[in-house]
Length: 183
Image 1 (cartoon, one colour):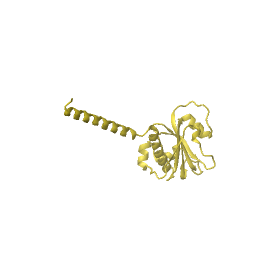
Image 2 (cartoon, one colour):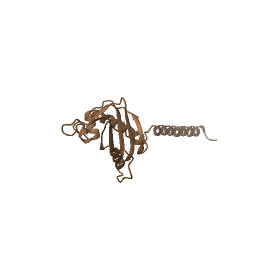
Image 3 (cartoon, helix red, strand yellow):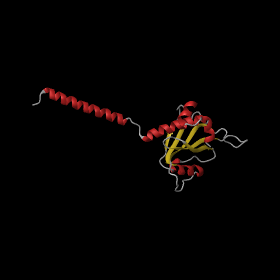
Image 4 (tube, helix red, strand yellow):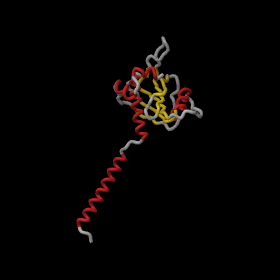
């Protein structure tokens, strides 16, 4: 029979293993998935961009992961695109609610700036670099991103936008240039 001090060491060793496993499981259970991380970044991007375009309270952002050519073809035709060649991974987004989005200075000389209740964008996956988009007008049907793949719709109501300086630094584009670049 083992002396009592060996049982104590064995018991303490087992307790240490159980505690280490519990901590490890607890930490891994709280790590966000890639989809959760993407959704959080896209939601914040939508709020920040809406603010830069004069909409202080957007309500929803719908997004889908796809490729650039598919998104560009869809947004330009509102149809399911045929097979396409560009495989650059992007997110196609639709931001709605809270008023209109205005792309100041993007209209033709002497005409009003484009304004509408829906903003669409194509962002490169990874760094969220803006690759295209613009204002959708009230007289067109709402884009249906689920035609491009599994779409996610998030509520962004009540989220706060970044300050102008934070926006400039984070997205590496000046709010002053968002209007020109986004149409």
